[in-house]
Length: 364
Image 1 (cartoon, rainbow, N blue to C red):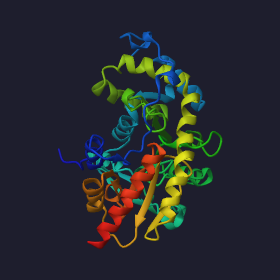
Image 2: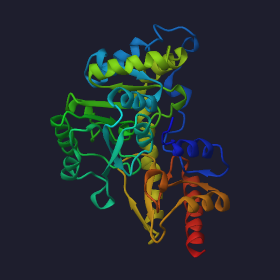
Image 3: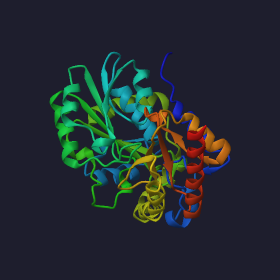
Image 4: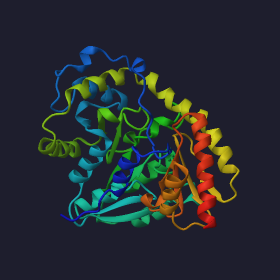
């Protein structure tokens, strides 16, 4: 079977165990047990149900999104949720509009079903927001799916609700489904733009998880919220690949959901603590352009005068002991994604090392 490998994921998995200051991650560190209040009973191998997920979790998410349980599907993380949406929504020869720069999983998924990827530019001069007229010009009868991230990965740009509404409405008029990965949206302060696109139309499916903002990647707890007909197709696929979801993970996810209001401020505080350090360093470098994110724990920057950053990232890792992500993985040679989820002194040290690596690379 021919498909486009998810090369970034292979890179990320290996880099996480490499030596050096880790500034390549985009997800929060694991929270302390006291914040979640796990109980010994959560570790038992029984639950209310693990076939399609704990009904308590389905009910919690249904209430969060203001809908019924028939519009909720639990998955092994948002990555599986995105996979299932693609498999349920697309056939060979269909077109899928994918943002660029963008998370490379969405291109690999299209190749699995022999769908054609159509690029939707998200340009720095426009604050990494798509142009609505450019988007409408891409729509035709063969476009079956539009894929967006909000907050945008890799820039962390926030999509204004009116622009998102225009996109959803235009896609709906074309008979096109819109998938919005909202896994980073809770990095925003509650009530300050953290809307869910699910509310904007019946042609919308959103995916998310407890991974990026809440640091619970090991639970593999994700979900999709969308049209019941689409989710029915996703359940058909789940029957093939997931005989049941992990019981302990469902129990622990239930406890985490109950305490989510205690976990979310941790991520926001980390952004507010470390962003001034990152901004001061970036502003001190005349050879760097960067996007100032409204939240999150990553910086998206361009190094002037460098057309590719794969080798720069290698120099930074091997010679200066700092780990960052080259922009090539996000269709953006010359860019870097730099994470700052570590403690402040390590952020300063890592950025100093990265600056030396840039200077060294440009000199040689």
